[in-house]
Length: 109
Image (cartoon, rainbow, N blue to C red; front, top):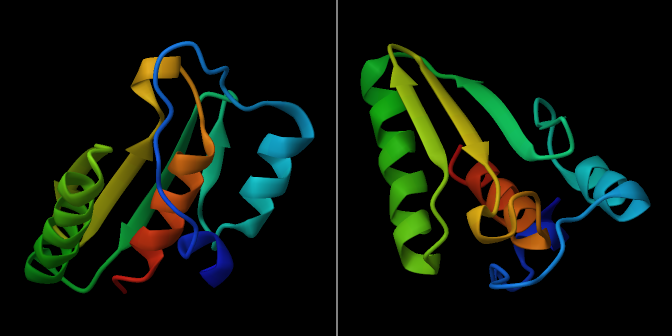
């Protein structure tokens, strides 16, 4: 997964097609435990953390990453849990950038 996290994170724009088939499956296999591809459209993982403070710190780290690369996930924060949902809005599905972003989220733990 470290190799995936080290890739350049460039979300596609415009008329790029969402990933599917073996390319999508190969990238999914590179992610850490808990990440799921939902309906071939988005990635999702719920992180279990010690308490609200730890969950908030993780959320802030993911948010800072999102701002730095202009690629913004859906983040749901509650006591001891953070759910991250990622897809590339401009193409209506998954791109390599989504997988790179997911791999980078793992580095905050």
